Length: 103
Image 1 (tube, rainbow, N blue to C red):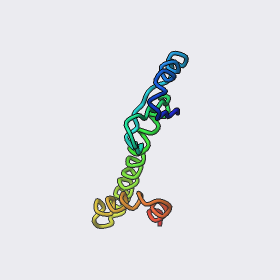
Image 2: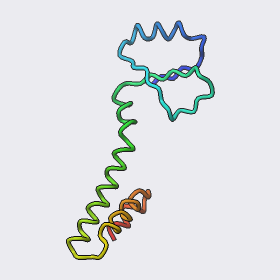
Image 3: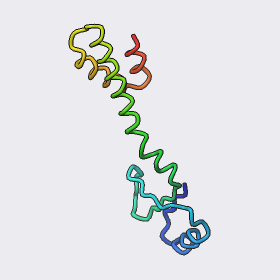
């Protein structure tokens, strides 16, 4: 990833784009920008990895909650949906979430 924040380098940036045509310009919303001159270059793979990281975590935690609810329903434990939702939220906690569900 190449980050350039100096407006006087615009000619060099154009030359860089000609020499390295595979570079993609990607805007990163999470980047703290002090002025509007930031340019972020990244390859598509790292962009997609960044974009899919959080939805994948949410999907994994929701799946853990659903499996917990399904197991509680199979064993006849009361209120399996309630415990599945609680389990999904607990699995979001780093370090203690998943082991707590195993107990």
